[in-house]
Image (tube, rainbow over all chains, first blue to last red; front, side):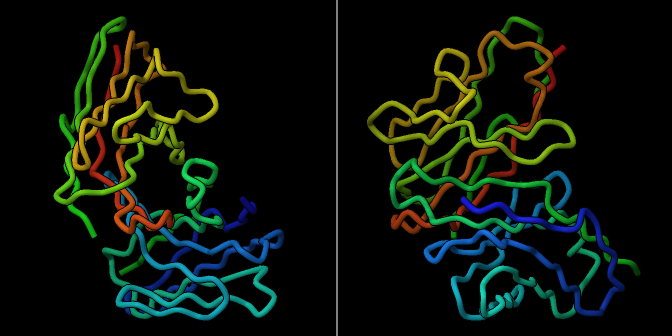
Length: 114
Length: 116
């Protein structure tokens, strides 16, 4: 799986959009970009994923650059409950049943400031 | 999505003993996984729990230390054997509900283990 690079920490004012960057310059054509987050003392939570096109769901938007070497997770109106560690993961998926896996890096610790 | 529960939620154990952690899912799922999160660290995959066959372990993890059972499509156990203080971690199970081998996984709340 391709390696990802994320800033270790970020702050964002409550109510503003939080934009979390991720670099994955070695991503290959069949690899997806996944985002998870882990709120303190909880298990990770799936947020969103994409391959090429931008994606949006009820939690967030995912913007992937045209060359797919980087992406940005956008939380449109951050709340205090969005304070968490956010993980960007690049993976081909586990369709080979064991040959692929989710590899969690160190992520970005996002703090929402009142 | 899936609702996942783990038992116990936390435990304090003595060195040399074993602890079995249970993971229960509210629906049948094809793939279940066990992760470890050491203090202040990210998650590391221990193994994939396969229903009806032996678990598939990641590099650095062995069956003698972390035996896993998967008797059906909604339940799995992870045992941490012959524990030492280095085994103090949060242990999490996760499931893939798609059945298509994607990486959209849903995680349990975790079991916080402290070994004295």
